[in-house]
Amino acid sequence: MAMAERRRGGNACGMAVVAGLVGLPMTPAVAQPVGEFDQLGIRTERWTIFPSLSVSAVYDDNVFAVPDDSDRLESDVFAVVAPEVTFEANTQRHAFAITSGAQIGRYNDLTDQNFNDFFVDAAGRWDVTRTFDVTASFGFARTQEDQADPDRVLTADTATETTDIDSFTGSITAAKDWQRTFARASVGVERRSFEELDARINDVAVTPGGDVIVIDTGETADLNEDRDRFTIPLDLRVGYEVDRDYSLFVNLGYSLTRFDEPEQIAITELGFLTGVDEGESQDFETLSLRVGTEVDFDRLVTGEFSLGVEQRFADAADEDDELGFSFDGDLDWIVTPRTTLNFSGSQGFEPATADDAGGSSLVTRVGLDLSYDLTRQVELGGNFRYLRDDRGDGERTDDDIAAGVSTSYTINRFAVVSASYEFRRRTSTDEDREFDRNRVFVTLTGRY
Image (tube, rainbow, N blue to C red; front, side, top):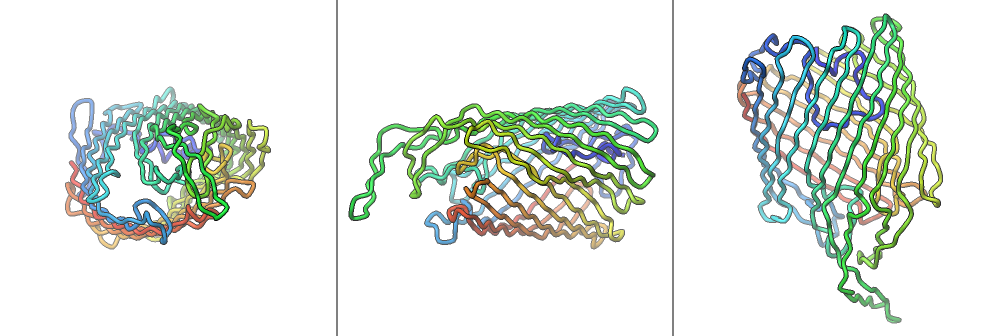
C-alpha cells in the first residue's frame, strides 16, 4: 500500500510542497508483483531504477496568452523531450526514493520561448514503530514561467520575455496512531526566486492634443525584484476513527510568507514603466481552522474533505486583515470497475504580486477528472478546471476555466502513446489579462 493511501494521508493545508513527490511503497520494491503492462525497472541489490523518456509535439494557438485582438497574438508548434529516472530503495522497513528529470522545449518559430527545465525530488519515511512514523521530502526545480501566469508584469518592451523560476521545497511530518485516534504535525519551507527581468524606465506625457510622448530615461528596473519570497507552512491535525469507513478530524494551519523586497512597479495603462517606489510591505500570515472527514467506503469512495475559515494578516498599513471561507478536498470515486472520477478543490490565500495585489489573493480551485478504461490497453479521459483569483478591494478578479480530453494506448510495458486537447479561457476585470487558448499534445513515452 502506497504512503499516500495511509489513513493519515492527504494534506489539508497544502503541505505537499514537493511537486512530483514519489509515492513510496510500504513493502520492499523487490516484492511488488509486476503486471503485464507495468514498468519493470532495473533491479539491483539495493535499488530499483525506473527510467523513462517522453517526446512530445505540442501546438499552441496563443503562446503569449493575450486577448484575441492583441498584436502579440502568436501560434507555434514546439517539441518537448523529457527524460526522467526514479530510484526506489529496496528495504524491508522504512522507504526512500529519488526522482530527477528534465523538460527541454524547442519552438519552431518563437525560439526566444525555448526552455530547459529540470527538477530533483527526494522523499523518505522512517517507521519508528508500527504506529509512529516520520516522513521527509525536499526538492529543487528550475522552470520557465508560463505566459499565462497571473502575476506576470506586462510592459511594452518585456511582454514576450520569459522568466526562469528557481524553487526549493522541503517538509517533515510526524504521524502517530493510537487505537482510534491519530495525530499528525508538519512543517515545511518553500523558496521561490525569479530571474532578473529588466525594463526601461520612461517619462510619459500627454500633449493637449492627446498624443502620448514617451522619453527613455536611460535607466532600467528589475520587474521581478518584488517577487522573490519564502513561505513557511505549519500544519497540525488530530482525528478520531468513527468506524472502518470514515474518521473525523480537526486541522489547524499556519503559514508565513516573506518577500525580499517591498518595491512597487509603476506602469501606465499603455504598458510603459515609469518608475519603482519603495512601496508597502507585501508580507502576510494566514491562520486556518477546518473540520473534515477521511473516508474509505469499501475502496469505492476514498479521500478526504474539510471546510472552515482562514484569516489573513497583512503587514502593509493600507491592507486590512481579511477573513475568508476555506475548504480543501480530494475524493476518488470508482463509479464502475472501468470508470474513476476524481474531485479536487481548495480555497485559501496565496502569494500574489501583480496589479497591487498587496502580496496575496484569495484563490478558489475546483477540478474534475474522469478516467475510463476502454480496454486493458486503451484509456480515455476528460477533465475540467475552474480557478477564481480575487485580488481584493476591486483591484482585479480573474475567472479561469479549462477543459480537455485525452486518450492513451499502452503498446506494451515499454511504450505508451497518448494524445490530448485542452481549451482554456480567462475572463478578468483587467482586459489585458483575458485570453482564449487551444493546445494539442501528442506524446510517445518509452520506459523500462
